[in-house]
Length: 228
Image (tube, rainbow, N blue to C red; front, side):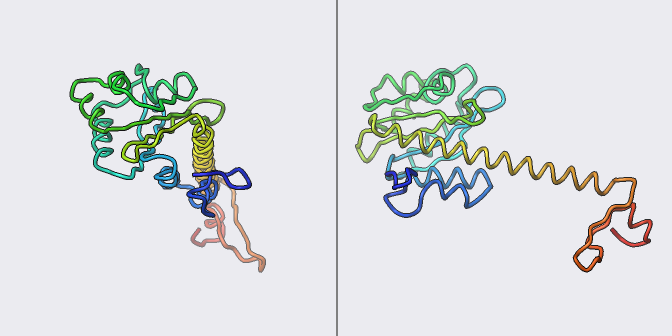
């Protein structure tokens, strides 16, 4: 991954950019999946996004990987041992502190700090990751999640020079969240307007340019003895 002339995070140097992915869909899950897919394998071997739950814990929202089997094992471990509000390691630490976490060369200390049981530790060690970078996702002035990049089978190391790109991807992830929230609010407002329109005690209607009804509420329909 690199940046183009406009400073957008670009996938593999090609014309498609993560910024353009945001306009492709207002459906949050599809957008998050597209973002993590764009990161792999140019910047990392695995990429995933965790979102803060109402209870303060984390929920995995999207995952992409070059080699799925070890990641599927980790996903299963995430389901069995989810990050709770009291966890302080990995992505939970990043969400709590609002600061990025970079481990250029992973050691056994990292999985040991995250493991919640001996079985969990075995899964984390078996994943075989070699480098780790996690950055906060901020939206609306607060940390709402974390973006994690991991290298494993490629053998490359994530370094300080990768942090800016990861933060840019996290910022665009936040934009996707904000776009989805705006879309949800617009849908709710539209539904409320429809409800108020349909239940209004006075006759209301919409006309086209030929002054023909295109929509009437129940009250106006009763007045004109026609279906709304």
